[in-house]
Length: 255
Image (cartoon, rainbow, N blue to C red; front, side, top):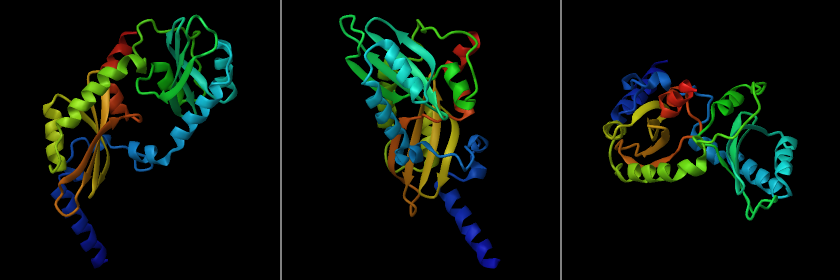
């Protein structure tokens, strides 16, 4: 027992030294439960990429717009939102087994068969999509119609998101401690809404500003507590606190 107490004490001291101790973190209550995989873990699992590639390949067999909807249904995907619907482009949000993707289909010269099909991760989710991800039995109360404003269109939003991501990445230098990154992030007007992972060699923040959220992944040197790698990436698995902090949540309340 004495050895166990000693190990616990040493581990606690190491966490405090890196600035990521749970007791010192005011967002600790927003940290995801331990069984939940972090964005980095999900990305490394490769499952979502494989599903996207498989669905994209199957959709390329479609001949008409109706075919694409049928292929989605036959493969267990439910259309949860229509972000865009034009003569030359259709964009669906789809859900299956708690995961969501965005299906982007391009047409040319009024063709019924697509000239390009892409399946992407769904970063800006409509309310119906979020409900369907949480409850597979959820059914929309009215027929789906295209959102004329394109609020949740990844294609519309991605350029501004990428520009901001690059700016944020450049503002986070190497060799700072975890707590210093948090101060720097908050000083740029972002709100830290969750700490998904907190280890001696790694910390992962969910952050929000405006309608965009990001995930900041920081690899730490266990000897010095300084960062040896900092990545700013997409935040596909938002905790509730993150979702509620975005301007998208405010837009939904107005609907």
